[in-house]
Amino acid sequence: MKDLLGAARRRIRMTPPVTVAVLVAVTLALGVGWMREHADAASQRHEALAYRLAFHAAELVDTDRAAARTLAIAAFEIHPAEEIRAQLIDTLVWGENLNLRTGSAWQTALSADGRAALIGDGAAAGVWDLTSRLDPKTGEVTGAFATLKGGRNGQTAVELTPDGRNAITAGDEGATVWDLGDPAKPVRSATLPSQDGVSVEAVALSADGRRAVIADFHGELAVWDLSDGARPKRRSTTRAHNSYAVDLGLSSDGRVAVTSADDGTVRSWYLTDPANPVKTADLSDPTNTPTAVAVSADGRTVLVGAAAQLEVWRLEGSSPPRRVTRFEGPLAGISSVSLTSDGGTALVTGESSSGFLWNLSNPSAPVLLARLKGDDHDIDSSALSADGGVALTAGAGGSTMWDLRSLAEIVADPEAVACDGRHGAEISRADWIRFTGQADWSDYGRADWDGLPVCRIRNT
Image 1 (spheres, rainbow, N blue to C red):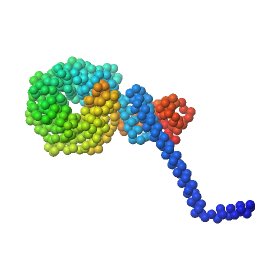
Image 2 (cartoon, rainbow, N blue to C red):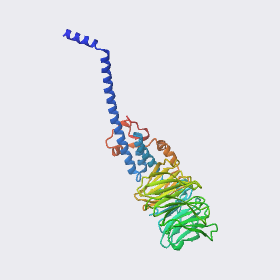
Image 3 (spheres, helix red, strand yellow):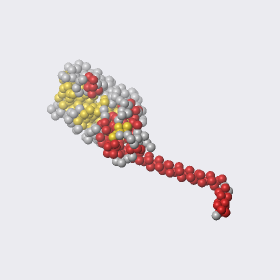
Image 4 (spheres, rainbow, N blue to C red):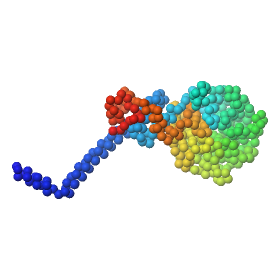
C-alpha cells in the first residue's frame, strides 16, 4: 500500500504544468457556464414577472389608478425593457385624464390654451370651460356653459379660434359663426349658407376670426370674409374635389388650406387672394380612403392620415410641396389628426379606444410618445391645444380630457417621475401573491418586509 501511495504522489508531482492549467481552465469554464445558466434563468424569471405586472397594470388603469401605477413601476424596476418603459409612460399619462361625462360625442375643438372646448353630439355642441381641471385651486366647476344649436338635420363639424372667443358650427344647410365673448351667452353673429343648400362637412376659422373656410358635400370650397360680422361676404367658391369633403385644415393666418375628400384626394391651396384660391398640389391619393388632415399654425407642416398610414408634408412657399415621410400608424383606420401650432407633436385617433401621440420634431423620424387609453369605443374626433398640453378625445363612449403638461418630463425619465415623492408606494404580500402567483418575494426585497417598496426593488 505504501508503495502504491508513493507512486501516486510521484505521479502527481510529475504531472506536467500544462495539464494542471487545462484542469483549472475546464473547472473555471464549468463554473462560468453554471453562473451564466443561473443568471439566464433568473433573467428570464424577472422578465416574465415584469410583463405579468405590466399586464395587470393595464387591466387596472380604469378601475384602480393607484394600483396600476404601483404595478407599472414595479414592472419597470424588475425589467426595464423598452416595452415596459412604454407601458410605464402610458400608465403615468393615463392617470391625468378626466371623463367629461357628455354622452356620445362626435365633434371636438379646443382653444389654443386648452381651457375652452366645443363638444358636439351630432345635434348641438356644448361650450365647455376646462379651467378647473387644469387649475384645481380656482374652485371653478368644469362644465358646459351653453349649447350651440345645430341645423334641422343635425351638426356636422365645429371649430374654435385660438383665443376661444369665436366659434363656427356646420350643418345641413351651411355654417353658423358664434361670438363667445361671454361663453355663457353665445351670440349668433353670422350665417354662412352653403351653395345650393347642401350639407357642410368641414369648417375652419383664421386665428383673428376674420376668415372662414367651409367645405361641403359637393366637394366645393368656400372662402368667407367675416371682417364685418354683421355682413359676411362670400369671396369665392371653388370645386375642390369630385367627391364630398371629409376634412379641412387651415393655417393661423387663413392663407393656407388643405382639403380632403371621400375619394381619397388631398389638396393644398393658397388663399392669399381669397377671391382666387390657387391649388398648389395633390398631396396624396390613397384609393377610395376617407382622409384626415391637419395644418400647423404657420401653414408649413401638413399631416395626412389615411387608413393606417400617416404622411408628413412640407409646404415651402413657391417650391413644390415635399413629402418628408410616410409611416404606418398603430391604427386600422384613422378618423382624426391634430397638430400643435409648431407641427412638432401630433395626436392621431381612429378605429381604436386609444389615441396616439407622436413626436414630429424630426419629421423624417417620427417617434411614438404615448398612448391615450380611453374607454372601449372607437375615437371619432380629437383635438390638441397649441402647445400639446391638453388633448380632447370623443366617441360613442363620451369625451375625455387629457392633461399632458408633464408629458415631456414623463417621456424623458418615467422612473424619476413615477418615484418622485412616492418612495412609500408598496405592494402588500397579499397583492404580491395575487398579481405574481408564487414569485419569490426575497428575490426583490427583504424577507422581513410587510410591504415591497416598488421604487426600491432589487433583483437578486
